[in-house]
Image (tube, rainbow, N blue to C red; front, side, top):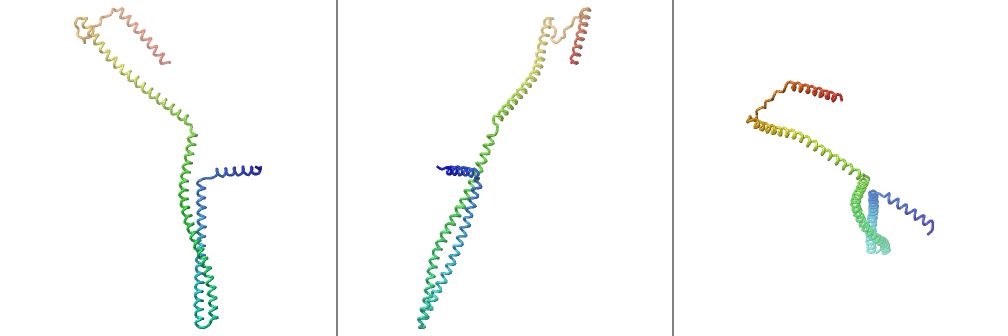
Length: 261
């Protein structure tokens, strides 16, 4: 293989590849239909010209045939009058018109066949154009659907699915934590309140039992009676008051320290 042949083949291959990539199915189909419609217009014009020629030939054939018949009648008239020379001349004219009429008849038959063929081709081309338009719309819809699907797939491929799912998982964990904290706070608050009431209720029971026990030990005092307090010696009472003052002072000092901090 020569160098020029190889270069030519490479050039044609690259050119075909460029053309193939540049082809838009929608535009190519539209142009194909336009080309077919242009061919249809040309074919119609050809049919119209052929029919016009046929009409003209029919007219010429009819005229020559009429002239041949007319000279036939004149030849008969000349013979009736006894003029053979004039009759002979009339027959010559009749022969010329008759031969022309026969030639036109052959031409007219050919034109009729040609017109019939062109009409059939015209009908076939119109049917093909109608079919092409339907197929064009179908292929156009398929091409648009394929392009939309390709764009969708490219968009999905460009999306970071892992990062998006990780964000959803983080948010889900956060919501679960918030729900757990809320439930814990509710349970703690509720249990504290319940514990306080339970302590009050249990305290009343213990006090009642203590009062009943004291009543039994004191010899039958009523359960609801308040116990009598014994008077403390004077020295002990003064000492207790002094200790209470010291405690109160320390408590107040602690309160002041807490306020300053």
